[in-house]
Length: 190
Image (cartoon, rainbow, N blue to C red; front, side):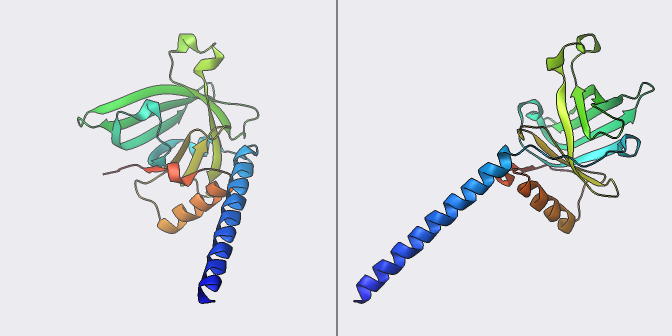
């Protein structure tokens, strides 16, 4: 009798676990296929300055970076943004990539495109990558940047360290937007 009750209990737990897993998978699949939402508006001038990389989805173009990753943005006369990305390599050398960003749409659009290819190639659409601001605090201190397919994700901060409460709240909002937090990789900042 006890053995039958134990077996019935285990079967119920297994069924509930399977149901919960399926529900979670369906919810995750539906949020990640939903169009990516950006912030309503971006004040580009206020966004300029130095941003430190706190975490990211690993990607091929940052493989040589071992830490101390930061981006410097400055507004150019034509309204475009000069982008200077720097990181420290495993050999303790500085790696630098200089590019350009342009806003897509109105002057408050949170959707930009960025390129690191030479300027003479800028007429080619495929040298531009999407840079969408999907989360940004009111003080312009903590931001999450991605692109429509959610293949890339960066969390940037005005300071090398972030308040854990603010960071965790940001992660919760990103998860609701369908981002896989298991893919996140923390960036070492000295």
